[in-house]
Amino acid sequence: MLIDVLELPYFDLSDPQFSMDSAEVTAARDNGWCARTNLGFAVLRYDEVRALIKDPRLEQGGGAWLRQNGITQGLLADWWAENMLFVEGEDHRRLRRLVGPALSPRTIEPLAPGFRALAEELVASFAGQGQCEFLTEFAEPFSARAMTQVLGMPDGNWHDISRWSTDLMLAFGVTVAQDLERIEAGLAGLYTAVNELIESRRRQPGKDVVSELLTAHEVDERLNDAELKNLVSNLIFGGTDTTKDQLGLAMQLFVEHPDQWALLAQQPDLAANAVEEVLRFNPTVTWVPRVVVEDFEFKGVRFTPGTTIHLLDYTANTDPEAFEDAKFDITRKRLPHFTFGGGPHHCVGHFVARIELREALPVLARHMPDLRFASAPQFRPKSGVTGAVDLSLSFKPA
Image (cartoon, rainbow, N blue to C red; front, side):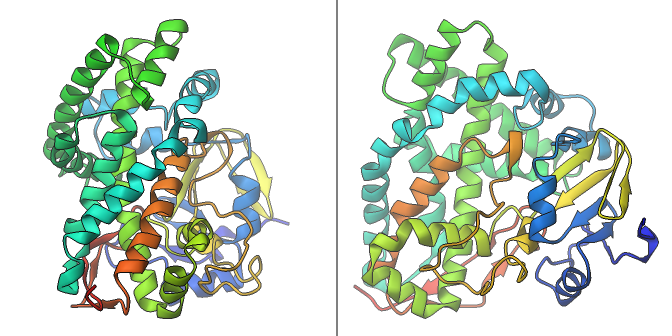
């Protein structure tokens, strides 16, 4: 029996006042698995997200985002069209096979001591003061400088790649059309740095991700120059801004759950589990888009080709039907969350993010006891890609 979709709850995902943690969204999840939105359907519950995120009748769908916003040509449109995030079918599988080994634990885990040392260095610069503006003093330099380690870039480049990555991330927001000039300037800067990096690694390979990709590039002609440049630029922006945002959201959680922060300081071996709980409970990416490519019916709703479906990982990750006690608890072993997506488009860089966060959080917990907000924090809307824009913290000085 088909559901009358006009009777489903309705959300305007483009409204700056809309929030995933609002009472209306929670009520909609309590009453059903699906809602209508101005951008298509929204899936609210864990079991339905788990089923649809790997469904072959859906494609990633983000490729249409720029067209929906009137952007059909130019530097950003070209980058978007070639981006592994949005490529489908055999081309996508080929790119993942080539990129996967470069971003595997075998390549990334040896960098963990460097990430940890970087965290110690940054915390030492403000630990004695008992306060910091966390984004500028830790999250931004940590994420950008960690990415220079991953890619084998000069450490001094971190200011530029952070700025360019932040500008490029605007392409995924609802103001993409009005921000286009700034976005394309950031992408142009990123491309210049990527070209220099690729040529440097061709002359002198190292034990880094770009050198690994170049090996695949030289051995396997299926990876062409344009794809290589696009992949490296994508890794830089994807691994910088989202990690910065996720660090800020982690600190928000720990301020609000001081017992968990104290526990992490006492038991740093909980770090890996704490990372998963942070990603589940307060993700920077709050939904996963998919587009229907084949007519089908699912739990009373008829989906037709071209329909956009947003899988709300934010609500699915805290669905009380899937998590008996969904409150934030770094000691609990949970069902897998959807913060890195799923299926063919599961985030290829998830090991990088997980290991960086795993190394940073225990260092912060040890050096920043009695964590508090020093002033009211400011956040972007909890919709799409979210994060803090001001996060002033206070703590007991070292």
